[in-house]
Amino acid sequence: MSGDTFRHIGSAAHRLRLLLLIGAGSACAVLALLLYTAHLHTALAADLTHAHARELAANIASLSQSEVASNDRVALFNRLESFNAINHIRSIAITNRLVEPLAAVRRNAADNLSAVTSRDITFAWRPGTAVPQPRGVMNIPESVAIWSAIGQIAPIGWVYLEYETDTLASARNRFLASASVMALGLWGATLLILVLVSRRAWTEGVEEHQI
Image (cartoon, rainbow, N blue to C red):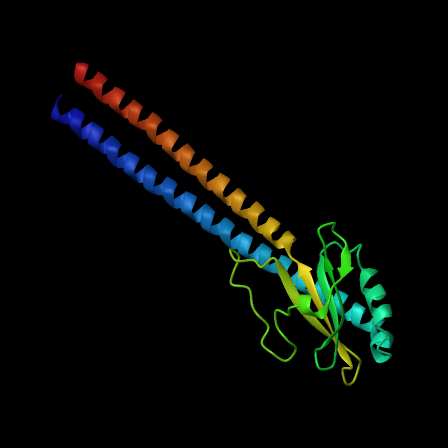
C-alpha cells in the first residue's frame, strides 16, 4: 500500500476513535441522567408513601383514642383488624404512653392482619429518638415505621404503624431498567456505526491503492 492509503486509513481510524468517544460519552450522559431521574422519582414516591403512612397512623390514633382511654384491649384488637383491607399495612401496634404494647396485629401468611402478643412486636425505633433514614435509591427498606401520638394535648398512648414500601422498589427498578436498556441501545448503535464506517474506510483505502 502507498503512504496515501495508510494516511487515509489512519485518518479514518482517527474519525472512528472520535465517534467512539462521542458515542460512549453520550451513553454515559444518558445513563447518568436516567439514574438521576430514577433517584428523584423514587424520592418523590418515598415522600408520598411516608405522607400516606403518617396520615393513616394519625387516623388510627384518632379512632382508637376512646379504647385506649378505657384500656379496652378487646376493642383495640377489633379496631386494628378492621384495617385488614389496606394491603400495604404490615403491622400495627397500640401502646400506652410509656410505649408498652396494649394490642398489636401483624399480616400473616394468609395476607390477613391477625392478633399477636407483645413478645412478637419489635419497634424499629421509639418516639423521641432519631428517625432512621434510607441510605439511597439502591437501599430501599421493605417497610417504613411511623409513630403517631394518641391524644391532642398530652399523649395517652401511641400508634406504631409498619407500612410496606414495595411501590418504591418497583419505581426504582423500572427506571433502572429503562436506563440500562437505553444505554445499551446507544452503545450498540455506536458500535454498529463504528463497524460500518471502518469497513467503508478500509474498502475505500484498498480501492484507491488498486487504482
